[in-house]
Image (cartoon, each protein chain N blue to C red):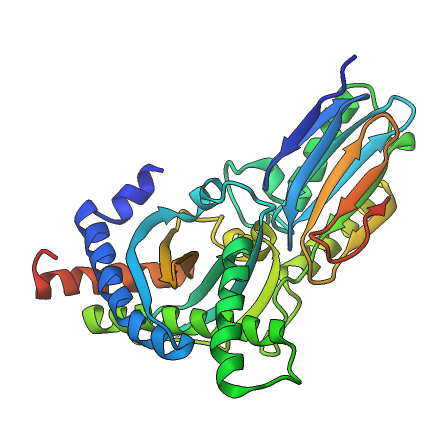
Length: 162
Length: 216
């Protein structure tokens, strides 16, 4: 099968199988979550914008919020045959791009990171790697043949492999 | 995005564009003083658009830019971003080096730092003139907080502002400025993102101003 690269934008998600690659660009305070089943070589990625869909009634795009994004990805993977005991997750992003002295409280990036951590814990998913925080943007490539995640920045630091 | 067209009439959009054009005229003098050379400002393109459409205006989310962020406080809250694409930034920094280093003779200071401080200063000037234009037309008092500079990919720099406004349909103003300095064309963007609470006071003030000035 030919290797294809699927690119998702902010607030989007995708699920696929080896040998595909899922990528996303320009992650700042957003958090990208990858979920992978190494036995079945399938996985999904969501480019999450906000920590919680709390208080929002009715319809909203599922991949915008950490809680609904993770549940949606898991649902899609389970329906393709993934099993909970095999699944591992990684998270990338949650930066604070502008460092100002007058900022009060944790920024949206930190809130996203802690929300993803909490929801993965609640869903009993192992967090096997993360590249979060800092004050730089990130690009992510998720290889579904190996589960490898490559994090690149705009020359801010070396590429990281998760 | 039908909500957005209801939010602002075509007439009001025209009025905003006119207001911003007048603001741009005031920028030239300040920029010439700063850079010590003739500056031309091509009539800016003003887009008034819902924030959810912004990511499609940014053709490449990973393109490298210098970005100055300023908070807005006063009658309208929110944030402003002055954005200079990488190529324009390099030109601007080299012009600034000539103008400022020649003038002040600061060999100990890294010229790159001087150049970047000029980027911040130009952001300061342009946002200042547009806020003044809004004040003069609409009687709204808006101040900006201390500018903070970051150089990175464009989408990460803006995503926090876009996220905060993604829950509701909301309007942003994007002004494309083109400066001509010594035959160099320098493209810059100024993005104004009012907070959710500020949309109504902004529209009310626009309505009042339009009545006062007639059709712009």
